[in-house]
Amino acid sequence: MMPTFIIARLTFLEAVRRRIALAAFLLGLAFLILYGVGFYFITRETGVPTGSEPTAQLVRSQIFNFLTNAGMYAVNFLTLAMGALVSADTLAGEIGSGTIQALVTKPVRRAEIVLGKWLGFAGLLALYLLLMAGGVLAIVYLQVGYRVPNPVGGIGIIYLESLLIMTLSLACSSTFSTLATGGTIFGLYGVAFIGGWVEQIGTLLRNQTAINIGIVSSLIMPSEALFRRAAFEMTSATARALGMSFGPSFVISVPSGAMVVYAALYLIAALAVAIRQFSGRDL
Image (tube, rainbow, N blue to C red; front, side, top):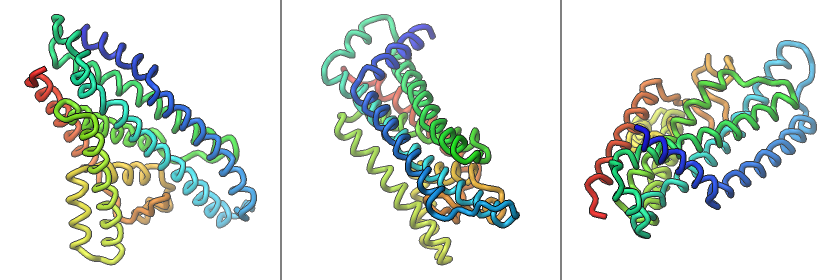
């Protein structure tokens, strides 16, 4: 296992030095600054209730929860984009340039190469998500003293979602070119995104066909379902009691815990495909 951890360390360091990772961190910093300024003016210039009576406290809590989940939605997208971009070129690019030969000619199994790269990217995504999500939560708490419910559970599901996207990108990169990998990943994400909205509208209108379309799209790519579950985990107790989330994407149909388990199995299967494809590929 030592070669795996060495490759993971080198992958992490290389990803940090690449411009994509640097751009992601700079974009994340710009977002946190913009979010902090926007949150400040929204909470002070839009008539947020300031009284101590229960109704005012409830309304204030719902507003703060909505704004926090709106920030987490942006964090989710930025983390997914980073996961897809940093891993799309890692195998396809190195195979195309021939640099992968420096590794495969050494006494290192190809499975260890894939696992090492996966661990390196997983560490990078964990660091990025902690900084971004922690920044959003810190901004909200420092300005208004609000603490979002169950941040660990919500952020954990977002991390699973980012790992899923990264692993799929790695699996595609073991077979396709960099451009084809990027197109495939964002195409699947688009299917999940549209399908998620179709399911929400279908639930609202009680249209079973639309609901089924959304469920199928979630099975094809469970990314959108995972975020809806994460938003529900970080939703206030009042909204949870109603079985919905008042986040930026109004969640009426909340995915069950079984979808989280399915996504984890999906991730494992994608990683197995990446290892199998790369191990059998003619370099």
